[in-house]
Structure formats: C-alpha cells, structure tokens
Amino acid sequence: MAASKMVMASVTAIRPFSCAAAASASASYPGRLAPHPPDLIKWVRREGGFVHEAVKIAQDASFGLGLVATDEIPKGSELVVLPEHVPLRFGSLESDGGDVADAVLANLARQVPDELWAMKLGLKLLQERARVGSFWWPYIGNLPEAFSVPIFFPGEDIKNLQYAPVLYQVNKRCRFLLEFEQEVRRALEDSKPSDHPFGGQTVGASALGWAMSAVSSRAFRLYGKKLADGNYDDVPMMLPLIDMCNHSFKPNARILQDQDDRNKKMLVKVVAETEIKQNDCLELNYGGLSNDLFLLDYGFVVPSNPYDCIELKYDGAFLDAASMAAGVSSPSFSTPAPWQKEILCQLKLDGEAPLLKVCLGGSEVVEGRLLAALRVVLASDVETVQKHDLNTLKSISVEAPLGIANEVAAFRTIIALCVIALGHFPTKLMEDESMLQKGVSDSTELAIQFRILKKSVIIDVMRDLTRRVKLLSSKETATAQG
Image (cartoon, rainbow, N blue to C red):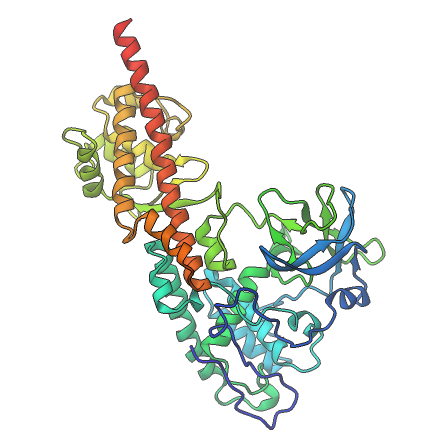
C-alpha cells in the first residue's frame, strides 16, 4: 500500500500524511511521527493532569517505548491522572449541521462496521494529525510512525501465519481498508478546502491502516455519558501517556475513572496496584485476549497465554473421521439421532443459524459446547443423557457424567482432532524453531512465533487430554478388577 501524499500544497494549515506504516513495519522500534516530539509528560502536566515524579518515558529492551519507574513507588499511588479534556475521542455521530468537516467525518464513521470500531476513532485521529495547531499534536507527534500488525506484513509473512482464522481476519481488514479508501475519496472529491476534514489531503489505505492500528493498539473503552437508564455508554478513548503502559496478565497498575471534586468532570487515572520497584515498567492488563487478537490489534503475541485457543468448525463428517481415527466404532456425528439433534440445536451446533465455531485451549481446555456434543453423540442411552443438564454435560470438571467409556471416546476424538489440526500447518514445530535461529526479518519472526504458539496450544490440549484418558483408563481397570 503506497503512502498517501499531499494533493493541495497551497493549504498551509495541514500536516502531510507521509505514512511510513507499510514501509517501516520491519523496524524493531519504529520512530515517532515527529522527529523531535514534544515532551508528553510536560504537556499532560501543563493541561492540569498529574504524572508521578518517579515516572518517565524510556526505551525497554523487550517492549520498546514505555513508562518506567525511576524510583520505588508505593502501592496505591496515583501514577498518571488525565483531566476530561485530554483524552481523544470521536464524540457524537449525530451532526448538528454547524461544522461541515465534522459532518463529513461523522458520515464516514457511520459507514464503518461496529467490529472495526477502531477505524471510527481513527478518522478523528487522522483529522487531528492533519491539523496544524491541533490541541492533541503533542500526543500525536509521539505516536509510532509504524505498527507491527499483520495488515502491514509483506504478503509472504501473511502466509507465514499459517492459521486460517487469522488469515481470514487479515484479508478482511485489508479488503475493508482498500474499499473504505474509495468511500473516503468519493465523500471528499467535491469538498472545499475549508470543509475538508483532512485539510485537502488524499487519505489512502495506508494512512487509514495506520490510524486504525494506532487506535486498536492504544485506545481504551471507558464510560462516557450517563444514560437515561442509569448506565453509561461505552466510549473508545485514546489516553495520552497512559497508553504507553505495557501489557501484563499480572499488572502492577490499573486504570480507573473518577470525578474531579472541584468541577465533577471525569478523571482517568492509573494507580499502582502493587509496590513498583525502581526500573520496573508500568504495566496494565489489556484483557483476557487470545494471541489472535493481540497480534491483529496490538502487533505482538504473549508466550504461555492462558487465554489462547485454536478455532475449529463443528462439522459432522470431520468429527466422524476423527472419531474413527481414534478407534471409535460407527460414530454418528453426521447422522445424529433425533434426540441427539435436539440437544445439538440447544448447543447452537445444529438447526437454524447455528454457531459452528468451537475452540480448544484456554481455561476450558475444550469449549463446553463441543465437549457436550461429543459426550451426547457418542452416547447410546438417551435416558442416561437426560439425567444431566447442559451445564453438566459442558463441564470438563465434571468427570465422566455419561460413563468412563463415553468420556474416553470423547477425549480420544478430540486428541485425533488435534492431530489433524497440527497436520494442517505446512511446517513442523522443529522447522519453525530452526528458522528463528537462522535470523529473519521482524515480521517473519512475529509470524513464526505466532504459529509456534498456536501449535503449542494444540500440543498442550493433547497432553492434558492424554493425561485424563490414562487416569480414566486406570480407574476403569481398577473397577473391573475390584
């Protein structure tokens, strides 16, 4: 994707979208938009915010640019506080007709699907990036000029991911950006310079991708206005300085919203969750996300991620084949009995508008819907099945509710599924590790690390279920001998 260029050089009050996102995606630590960016900490303080005296911006060997403690910070200390006017948010999509440029921007935002919400705020980010004298320039100038998300990978490294669900999402996002580029162009082709939300500049797919990536990797979804029912609407916001905290599943800080006692306006705070030692990075928990989402939205993956999983499609013929490979005689996943089909419909795995995506891995090891389906279809006694509710049948912690033989058959079928899933990867784990040792580009390394972790999830599931099968088999043997 080519970088966007200025087309109206006579418009002086703009900053050009010389977006380096695609070209620089291989840089370990991409530079910031401004060659000499403003001091972000000073700006936050000048705008009435607070930054702890022991917090500074520093380069970390593992995570790049982030916030670091220069001294010990006690638990409960406020680390960063932003007043209400500092976060960057889109605002209302309902135009009051007063500002033509804002009305155009709101109309474009309405065309963005909800699942790509980051693009909506990304439009606002691009508008402020283009505007000379923008209130948020001290923040925007400190943003990375490139992001390591897969939409900016070379084509070969997108293939190197080797995992169909993520390949689908990458291709979907790339198609959206190319199509949305045309929508933006059509919406702006007759705009006067004064009515143009981006100062007369052409906004290409590369600039749109940069903005969407900036938001997806840095924005927080926080409470907005209070609604009539007493709840609050959910508003994506970019939080200057706070968004430089790195991720950890065991964070040393947390983010919260509060009210300023003086004017009752919103404050966004980061507070020390634990005692923070000197030279420690400030870390927030970005959420219980799989490596698919970490890669797609943030451009990194997390080793030993307890929330990582692999996606499979529930398919009767495929399950029959896996079950037979596991030694189960005459499975009937493709032709379930009427009573089994009724339960599969309750599990949303059959009937109208079924949800056929199922997962292995994560905290459940086996998604409850898949486990219940296997237990039910591999059972022959309807009365035994009807003694249990769906929650029992879906729980792996409930040991062998339909008998040991049934449970062993279900687990062996899943192990066979795992073997088939591993076989779908073009390379083996040892080959991947060998490639990393040879030295590759950053995007290639990230793609290989991702697929290694996906294969590791599958192997971990196989090991867990093999252990369970051995325990069940030993119990069955002991019962037979007793």
